[in-house]
Length: 179
Image (cartoon, rainbow, N blue to C red; front, top):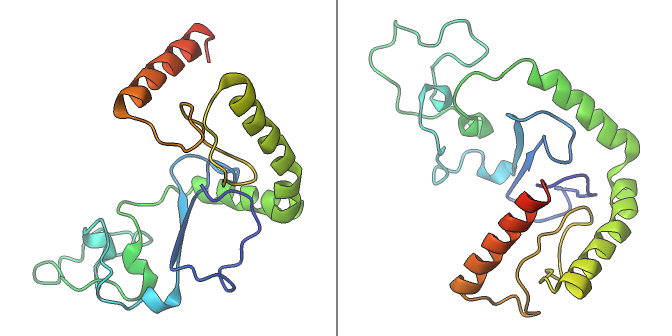
């Protein structure tokens, strides 16, 4: 999850950037945002993961009332032009878009830099306590507003057996404490 962090795609060498709106962008489940650098828009090496009619040229879009133009012989094989060929299949849920818009307005109103600055010390404190008091491994690099933890060892290396045992113990702890 990208979350509410200051990030400028124009100043960073980013080809793709995805953000699920339900995590730190205050939207609902079922919607994500994808940034595709303009250099990739027409690159034929990049094909959609979902190869249905929604990403094909000359097919009705999700905004059209009909799903398939019966006047065309067979299915088109060419993809839509630009980044639209990477759109997901199915029709977008119109209820989600105003929710995402309001969530993004909140993020912009509060300011990603301000949000990150407020949450970074709290996240660092949680990381220190996880490491010092619980003996968990905390990655040295993480976002200012989230981090992952795992079984001990500062180098982060763990055997599959250690990971499985830790996962079982963590699941039992969470279940016992009704988390």
